Length: 300
Image 1 (cartoon, rainbow, N blue to C red):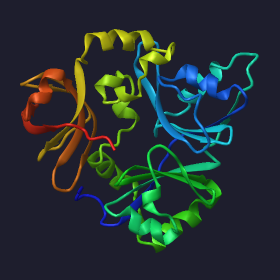
Image 2 (spheres, one colour):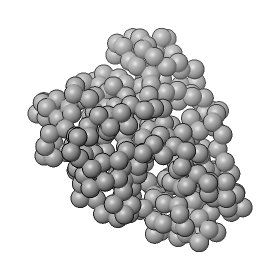
Image 3 (spheres, rainbow, N blue to C red):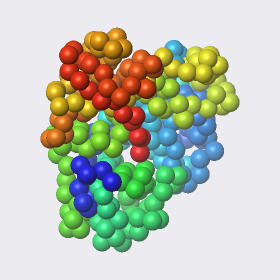
């Protein structure tokens, strides 16, 4: 059990851009842009997929919710308008697709903790009914369990205050900005700075690439890399008693690495870093003279 987590639960209000797609051609239009099949999604189904450029590099990872013919798209925090511009540019003149910016209408929350079920049961939600494949309705809110320690929720912004208050009454405190970084990193939750511009296989997202799907931006690059069998770099967790800084760093053991995220947990320092593939078998490396241990990232 992750000891940095609250014994019950805490909630963080994300700054994720939210987009709603509607129209008879919306799912097919979206699928053309993504690395996996989504056009067969049914009501309240949940999926995740990647948006890549023509070089196969990740631009965004999307959390999807199919709602009665519409698609709610949750982008990564910090991805700004790029994803929506790509979706808009991909609409042909004769297609029926509406792209709506929903940042002012919908909020995205992440609930984390060692005993989320104890909090949710006070709201009348059985944690055991939540899963990773579907969204569960709670009034106008939608909830899905990513793992036993992580629940995602999307809710109308006008109901956000009431929902947060109900969580608080049942023992779920709010996470402030400075506390989110060590929590999300300890859980293996990636953000846009960890994935942007990297290949899916480098950042542990190759499960969202379906080569048999057919044409999408970057598909030829992914197929070529798949035939080679391995990536040249891998995103890992680094731990040290010293302090990490983001950016490219020199390692006496393995050459250049790139730290994408870092934080102080209170007991040590934590970093996500892209390292040469040969380094993943090492237990410790030296970074600018500082010793750091290597661990795999366990995505929720």
